[in-house]
Image 1 (cartoon, rainbow, N blue to C red):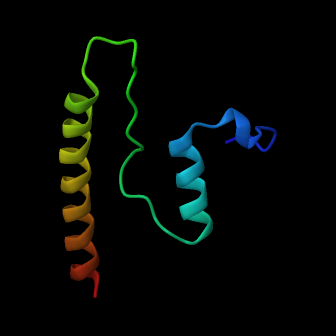
Image 2: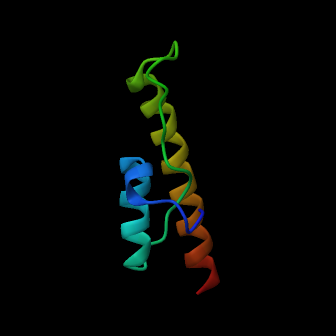
Length: 68
């Protein structure tokens, strides 16, 4: 992300992501986003996103355990 961008230009999810990463948290997967002007409901998008994140989290956990 560009250093020239101010916090006012960022979305809430981006601010939260940056704050957590500043605390050394590691994001698993992509940030979920929804186009309110689109044809899909936010709940449908959220369910698909959550399924993807849960799968990615399980795969990451298995890889980390195997590496120990």
